[in-house]
Amino acid sequence: MARHLLHALGVQGRIKSPTYAVVEPYVLSDLNIWHFDFYRFSDPREWEEAGFRDIFSSPGLKLAEWPEKAAKVIPKADLVIRIEVRADDTRLVSLLAQTPAGEIILAGATA
Figure (tube, rainbow, N blue to C red):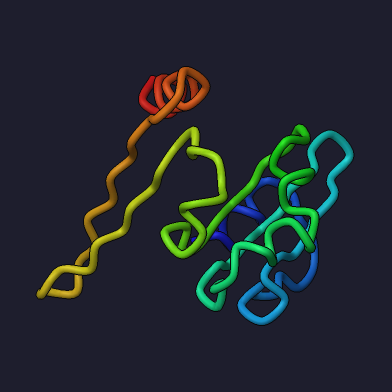
């Protein structure tokens, strides 16, 4: 999903999974994007040492896979997208706004 979203936003070329690097940055002319994968995240000290606090406090889009692995250190997401795989191989997608900014995003998505 992240790969398709990044292409839709205008990111050109190969989009790498941040599984091993934890974060992959993308710069568009009007938007900075950081794609995180916290699957291997295990030590909150990594958060500070990698400068993630600075990244999350800066303007731009942050996409986080496996956010529950870093739940104690990352700020609350504006918008949570959950994808549930069902027994019949269909997907149930739900969107949850957790902040006023997320409510604005969600209202725009349903308009």
